[in-house]
Length: 411
Image (cartoon, rainbow, N blue to C red; front, top):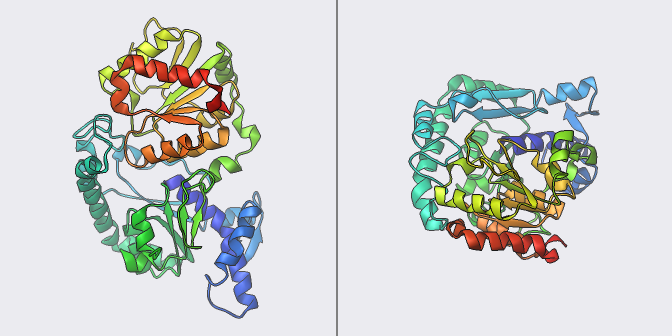
C-alpha cells in the first residue's frame, strides 16, 4: 500500500499546481474548489508536473528534485526486520516511525505480516466472511489501535508533522488513524485511498448514502477498473484508478532478462504460479503441495515457474519446474510465451492480468480475492478454483489442462 500512496503523492503534485493557479485567478483561498475540474486533464497528461510554491518543474530538473523532497511518507513499523526498508524511489522524505512494542510482539506471535503460519494460517482458514472476521478482526483491530496510540502520543512527531503545514494528505480507508491524524493536523485537503476495490463500508462512511471525518474527504481513490469491475453506483468524488501502475509502464520496462527469456524458450507452454507476498507457497498444506507436484509430473511439455520461498527438495527429479523466491511478474505476464497464470487473485495481480490478457486460474485465499477472480470470470478469461479443492489432484490437473487447451480464455 505504501508504494501506491507514494505514487499518488507524486501524481497529485499537478492537481495542487493547477488548483492553486485557478484559485489565484478567482481570488479564492480554497485549495479544493477546482480540484475536480482539473482531475481529468491531469490524468490525461500523465501527471508529469509537480508543485513547489506554485512553480512548475519537469522531471530530471533541480526544481523537480526539490519538489520530491517536499513529499513525505509516514511508515509505522510492524516488523523489526523491515524497520528501515522501502521500495519507494520517488519520495525522499520517509519517516520510519518506531513500531509499538505490543504490535511487534503481536506480529511475531501470529507469524509475521506474511501470515501463512503462526496462530492462524490463511491457507487453511475458511474464506467465508464470517471465518475471516472471527480469525482476523481482533488481530487487525489491536494492531490499528496500538499503532494509532503510538503515533498520536508521540509529541515530537506531531510537532514535526504540524510544522510541515501540508497542503494535502492521503491515507488508507480501513486504518482510520490516518484520517484522524490528518484532521488533528488540520490538513485542508484529505484523500482516502484503497488498495482494494470500493468497499460497501467506505461507501456508507463517505456519504455514498468514522463517518463524519470520512465524509469530508475531497476525493476517494479506489483501486478499481470500471471496465473490469462489476457495475455499481458511485458519487463523482469516487475516482477509479485501478491499473494506473501497469498502464503507465513503458514497453521497454517489460522486456525480460536473457535468463528469464531462455526459461520461456525451453517449452511451448509456460505456466506462472504465484500467490503474492502474504500466502507463501511453502506454507500451504502438504496435500495441496502434492496436487501441484502431480500437476508438474503430468505435463512434461510445460514449464512451471513457481514462487516458492524455501530451499528444499520438493521438486527433486522434476526438470520442468523452476522454483524462485522472486520473479519479474509484470514482464512475464506481458510476454506472449506465457500461457497461464495461477494466482491468488490479489487486486494487483488481477489488474495486471486484465492488461496482459492472459488466462488465469484464480485460487482465492481470503478477503476480496474471490470477488476479484469473479471479475475476470465474467470476461471469460479465468476460472475460480477453491483452495479447498486442491486436495483433489485429478480435478486440479483437468482444470489446468482446460485453461491451456481452450483458446476461449486466451481471447
